[in-house]
Length: 222
Image (cartoon, rainbow, N blue to C red; front, side):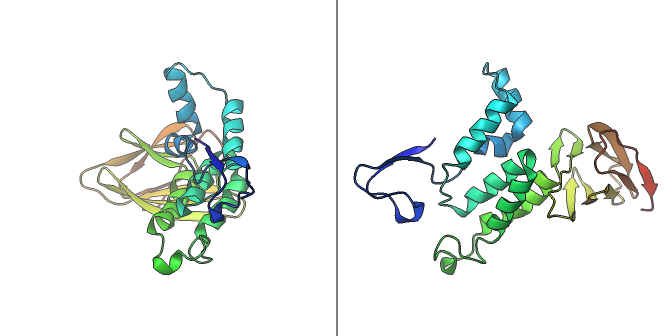
């Protein structure tokens, strides 16, 4: 939750140090971690199940409230914010992602990089590409892919392994492709693409339009 800070305040926060000044400020992402971990839809459904029905508009206002009051006193903070914004405001998500990416290159924390690179933040930026921009997650025996590339990212490619099956994922503005490596233990990989269940036979490739909600798979060589 936002912290009520009174004089004196830490110099890196940018908060006024005048006597008597009171501010609401979060050092790093806290409440928005719920959106980061569960996703917007997952958080809304969880709140409703607990007896706290919340609308998309209320969630959007909550996100904006904390975006305006977070000082990013940790390199992980922008990782969380970029992931949250990637699903709700891709343009701002891309800009925040680039800021997170430059944490060590620009030493954005003011001298901490010389003590060691921020491996957590570096790994977090990869997570943004796969989980937020490419929309990758798992549910039971299925791999779910729901890509929403921001304007600044033309394409993304990554590999993953799910239940012993290695998959190569490529997504650009027009096409989502999944190449399943030959696997003796699994005859086919089960996916969810554009809201519909699909399969990719072991050793083959399947492709779908990146944006339409109804996937129309096209067979490719494996």
